[in-house]
Image 1: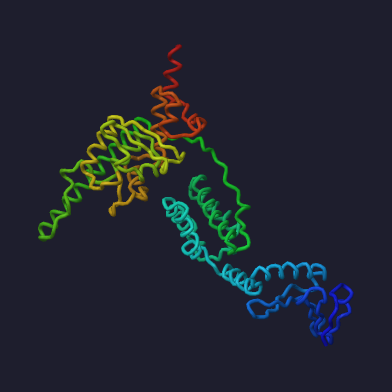
Image 2: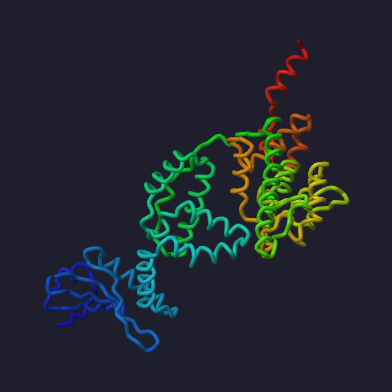
Length: 411
């Protein structure tokens, strides 16, 4: 039997399984149903585009009659605006179901990568590559199953392997950003990584080359070049015996590849790695002996001009005559910016027997040499492209031999 009365606490309590349904007399379509076991649930009939649907509002064990009525009123307001609330619920549920099985690797490829490319195509590949390489073991894991505890274990492992805190923080923050977008796009309700706080570390670390280390590095570059030339000539000798086409010879060339020009430029300009790799020949004015770091490639988003000293000027002059790229100073084999110089750099350090020295430390080396030569900090700040002098104050130090020399002045 169907009853027609205003839905109230009293009328809900009076419902029996024989009644089956109670239609509210105030809001059309709002009704309660009772099962054979006595469970009461609230529903809302509505019509849209000539079709009738029955929308489940919730159980009486959770919603009071007043709460159910308010919810029915709100849903009817959506229907009036043309929203098919039943279909919308199904679509939202489908998205939630998808999220339960949406794995990190697939999310990065299908959702996050297109988003990053539209935001900043230059950094998109780096961010994605870092997430994929850093969290390789997580790529087949569902987004909802990546927990703060997982990341804590991952951080501890990387720290024990000697990974720098700044590198660990960058990777974790990149993953956090990806999962936050998944929440924003309603692919998952929330993520656990906001509980993971960044590792604290001393970012005032300054590592520069001693005179002996600098000489060993430059010597290692020359030895590397000579070894590559020797191997190429040896290979060509064997190919000529077999009457095969020869590889291009390096004998008459100043450089065997980009490594020496890149390192010399980094040591003598203080450019960041990203600024170096994005450098184009149009950024370099060999006549006026200077280069410009464009605002789009600068971390400070400001253009700056860096003079070229004799060493880097001579190197770039020779490299320009040898480099076939009309665009990039340090191009890849397909004439795009180089993306990674890690392998040849680590081999150079090993050959030069230099430890604890990153490619970025060439920037510290440049700044430290300027300060030790008596250049004022504000000039150093301008050359490095620091927006704040506080960053440059890290270089306000002297090497031990300079301290001894200073003390000896009064002795």
